[in-house]
Image (cartoon, rainbow, N blue to C red):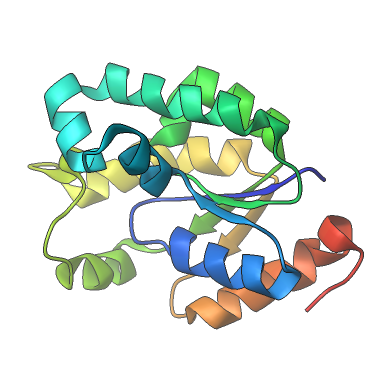
Length: 172
């Protein structure tokens, strides 16, 4: 296995779980949203609003291509990265895709505590977002991990038990 790629809806735990996994396995952690923000000096929200979704997905694609040389990293993808078919293909080549599936009610609790939401959530019904992505996310996953009603540490432990042996020859 080259890398572990975590994806899911916003606030499903990609970044926090990814950091925990990287620390446990002593591997590099990469958050693609943060990498894009570093490269362009603007928040993902600002880039998305200024350039539009197709251009933003292109920025994600360029970053994924850049990451193709990485091995044994834990990578947290942006919430919508895999809605783009080209990004799906590149991500599949990067490593195992782990879908952090989280129920709408739990996501709403997590989202309610945030000051600023991702730009694509402005004016969008969250249930529709979940409905539009759930089938795609489940279809392309190498592993699906249900995160509702689980702490980030339990989610990380579950992933470690599932893929740890393949990733490093060890488990949590």
